[in-house]
Length: 182
Image 1 (cartoon, one colour):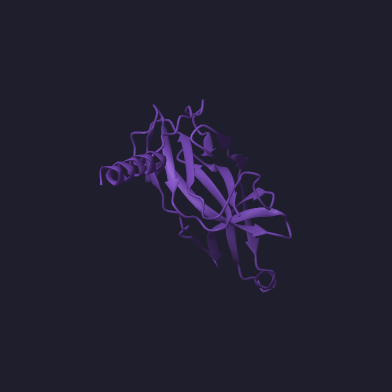
Image 2 (cartoon, helix red, strand yellow; image 1 turned 90 degrees about the vertical axis):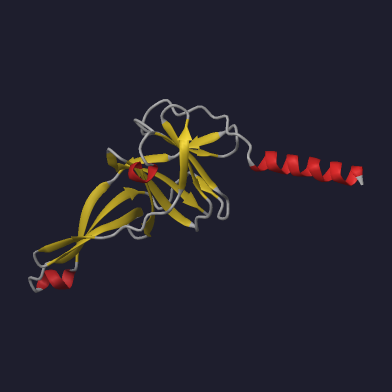
């Protein structure tokens, strides 16, 4: 009986320790850097690109003098070289100016669409109809975050489907930190 209890206790302690292993990665050196945590001791910096802004008009609407189009942000390339497997928990460390604000106000994670013809990734940000423009509600990916080090957040997303994603930080919304899920 004592042996069984001892074995169960040791199993519980080892399982609990594995579940909550502490990450020992140093904070990124500069504000605005986001790294993908690949293990408790290793990481990979996310691909970083400055997004371009563009509009796309409907050719039929242009022929008849009706202004109709959509605004978008885009980055080059069909997919990011930084990849994680679908079903794997996404863990990131984002260095920010100050980590005393609510992380939801500072960090945005969203999915991008692939434009196969032009070999780029895009996100539609608004529409224009006649003389009226509308900002679209971007569907942000929910996440959990906690303070990490002096000026960073540890960001965790339990499940994220396959696709291409971007992360922006407050103060530099035109700089996209990119990764993909296979």
